[in-house]
Amino acid sequence: MVLVGVGPLGCIPNQLNLQNSTDGCCIQRVNEVVSAFNQRLVPLSISLNSSLPGSFFVYQNIYDTFFDIIQNPSNYG
Image 1 (cartoon, one colour):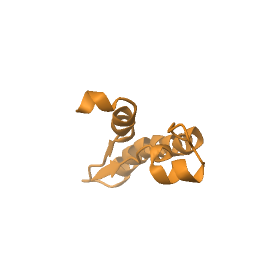
Image 2 (cartoon, one colour):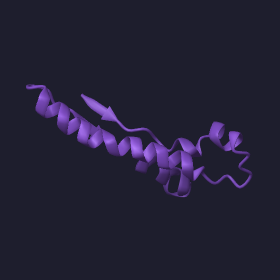
Image 3 (cartoon, helix red, strand yellow):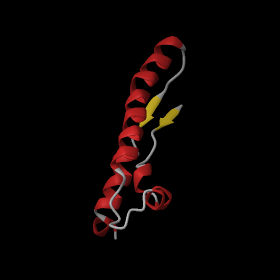
Image 4 (tube, one colour):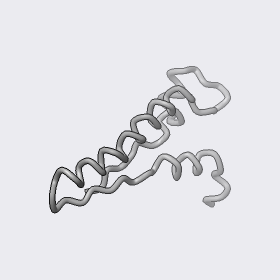
């Protein structure tokens, strides 16, 4: 089972609009909350693996990938 982390929600148009961001910069506070959530998924996957014999849980970090795409779009075509 893959536990997929949450992407940088502070960079999505909805959040930028709600915060009246005119410079296009991501909303740091929102991304901090997302990062805190994602950090809790790692120990959760370890806990689930140890408490559910025969199961295999892994955490997939998509935050860093998407954040890099947002910050460096020219690297991706």
